[in-house]
Image (cartoon, rainbow over all chains, first blue to last red; front, side, top):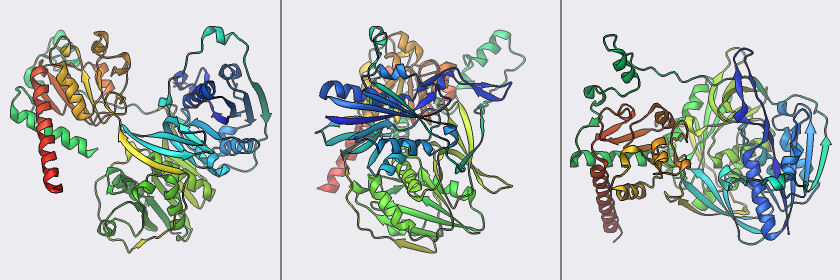
Length: 282
Length: 338
């Protein structure tokens, strides 16, 4: 029976973030867990249901972050370990050290986590944990096939529809992407039922020294400004409105050289050649 | 103090330079000063020495890996560590692409060297007073920007978002080009194969070419030809809000402000008028081809090529043209091999 470890990161829900122009800072409403991490957890729970496994979730979080433990314990996990440290956000690479130190105390066959977190978009923790544990790793995994308990086949999404297949030997760390599976809706009757698994909290002290990287500022994304034609004053209100909406009937305005008004062999050839050229460019 | 800027050049399938390669070189040029030495590290699976001798760097270190090894970051790590041991370890800035292969490598080498890394940079500038590098990054699902810098350290590692790595080919004459031989230690990770996902499974947000359908397609008889075009281009079919409401496409294939935003290279809009909400969803597309029988459709203002005509006439012709082209290519291949 496999011993599976899942690394879950509590994050600010990006959906709830907004830029406060008055105070020139971000405000947010809710916390959540990194969605790719939950995909990994869901996958492990599905595996456990079919073949049996022990699932341990390890969370490294800032002391100020409120962990919604109940939300995690609804999954069929066996143990959840939360390690809290003050000002963790300031220490960029410290999360990996905390997680690796905790993992060393246990023995796991496979460690799963999301490849990148939605909040900081760094994508460094899984790789660093693997390096600290001296185990191989693969990130951006979108499919896992189990050949046998020690040899797995995984598919890595390279983007642009290209998928690479690898054969890997356990022990191993796998970073997954959101498309690993569908997150399952947990029914209401299960939500109200008693949660399973143990829940442990360890508190650490803030390390001494200074971080190697410094965040200078966080700002709102600058808007993309687009310039449109300003309609002529001589047009009637209705015509001006239609023009702004791009529904003007003035054919000569829309159909420049790039738009052909007829379908003929020459145009079709030009189009197919262009598409092929653009496809090759990518 | 002399600074080394070391670029780990990204390649396509280990054998060709791409816009991404030249884009990384342009980023290196942006931060280079008179006291900078530019070094290229090229781990490839079949580049000619001539191509390496024309790279715009002061020094080029290169190593050859079989394609099966080239696809595994573990082997890149072994080669990189060997090449890194040749540097004199003064102040060094390492630049990588954020392609999964290079990203994994960059994080691992920075970790091994116990040096900091800034990943997924969108822009790199130099602070005029402290002369330190400032990287701009997107955080919180692109809802915010973060400006970050390194503390005083000997080695700085950076990976760049692939979307900003775009440049034109450049030429130069390196002072020396050195090949590195290395005995590889077997990795527990084996590369098996690479495949292109079929258009039916491909997501509209990940595809290179996407077909979009709208109200103009509803009730048409030539829907089969759109499916054929999708197969020829390996392009998933998405559509406008109206197409979703008419039941032509599933909800998750809707493109626009109320659906997905796509960043394909090619978008073929069939029977789509181009509402502002739909145009918002295709703002990241490189080339738009519009087919619509209404010459006043707003999509023609956004398109690169537009055809005013009936799609039932255009699409079968386009598919035939592609098929003829494929056939002739196959014939040429046959002649070469036989």
